[in-house]
Image (tube, rainbow over all chains, first blue to last red; front, top):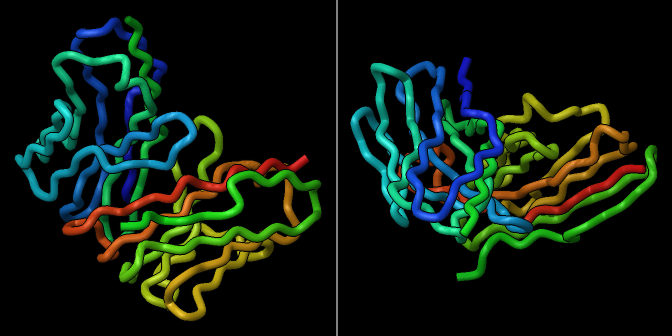
Length: 110
Length: 116
């Protein structure tokens, strides 16, 4: 079946540090992959997505590359800001269903 | 463009009571989703509608949960009777296509349910 596994948090970083949040998936067929972000008290927002192997999604300085050979979609940002503090969810879309990971909480301190 | 609307934002009920949540998707979005998000976990899909038809309700506890989308626009999710383990945030989302390959899902702010 389809599933997503992402690194457990919480993650605490200093401002301007490099961020990596690992995400691996199990899927049949050719899923699309997503990163969603949830700020405190708000609903989920799409951060970036990739619909086929080797695609790179990017937005707001965040990037993730769809790696079929390693079944991964790791989220990276070169220099985090305090405003990036949120919970990040990796997700995949397969057979018209969405599967979310458990989320990784990120706190960025000044 | 108005976003996905949900009400109420918060609800506290006692176990064995009933509760209903309402969602109004973005205008023109054919696909509507209800998710349950338990604290510390990712959203779990409960039911997915395409227009007013059910595409997937395999994870909906049908003995106590029900949902409808009668006119293919807004939707209601009901729990009757509620259990303590139903305490969660209930998220509604909508999209133009069911697979997310072309169009993203847009989420509402959620309804936080506490069952005491």
